[in-house]
Structure formats: structure tokens, C-alpha cells
Image (cartoon, rainbow, N blue to C red):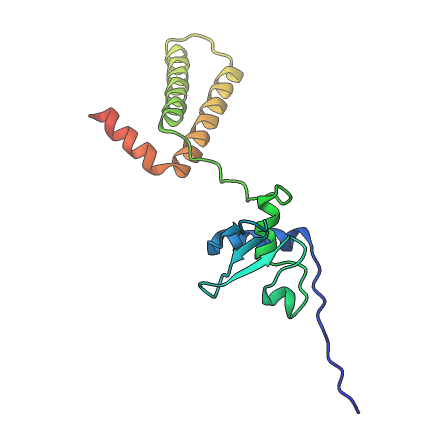
Length: 168
């Protein structure tokens, strides 16, 4: 009985093209154009001194020549150089809060604390203070306190350096 071999058929998907372009960038392969013929060649990722001819459709690399893979880093770099394949980088993480924004939040927290202290003092002097006003003050202070905690957690170095400079 003959043994059946299972062959994996590779397809050209946007995800694979992005992965190939990322590999091209990460490995530092370079695209050159041959003077006179205009042909494009791309350096090998693994074999120094070796280049592969490509036009974006075919490539002389082993991935294409031996296995028929429709996607390789050489073609991805060529297509990118022609403006036909954009690199879709992952979004940058949100930058940490600046020390100034944290300081503004702390100022708001301080002002809210002053508001509560003022309401309390007025109550102690016998003034009638609406309980809803006091609750609102505490809610606002709570919001500022949460915002300060989030901002300082995302930027502890910035805040510490700003606090040190302010204290000096």
C-alpha cells in the first residue's frame, strides 16, 4: 500500500504578508536595484553575501523555489518599496501622564478637599448646609483621587521627578 503524504498549502493572507514584512525589517535585509536591467534583488536573511531576485510575484529564495510559498520576506520588502504593501504596526501604548497633568489633578484634589473643609467649617458654625452638596463634594474628590492614582501608576518616574523638582 502506498503512503499518502500530506502537503500543507500555504496561502497569501494579509496577516502572512505583514508577518513577512516585519521579518524583513527585523532581520535588516536590503533591497537593491541592478543597474542596467532594473531588476530588484534582496539580501538573504540567513546567508551573508547572497541575494535573491524578485519582482514581487516570484522570488529566487528557497521558500518560493522549493516549497512554492506565495509569501516571503523578500517579496514583502519589494512590495513595500513599491508602495503596494503598507506596514501595519501595532498601535503605540498610550504615553504615561505627564507630571504637569498629574499636578493639575492633585490641585483639583486639593481644591476639592478645601471645598469639603469649607462646608464642614460652615456646618460647625451652625450654618445649614444641604447634605446633597456635601455628597457632591465627596464624589468630586473621589473622582480626582481615582484620576491621580491612575495617572501616578502610569507615570511614577515622571511624577517622582516632578515632585522632587517642585520640593527643591
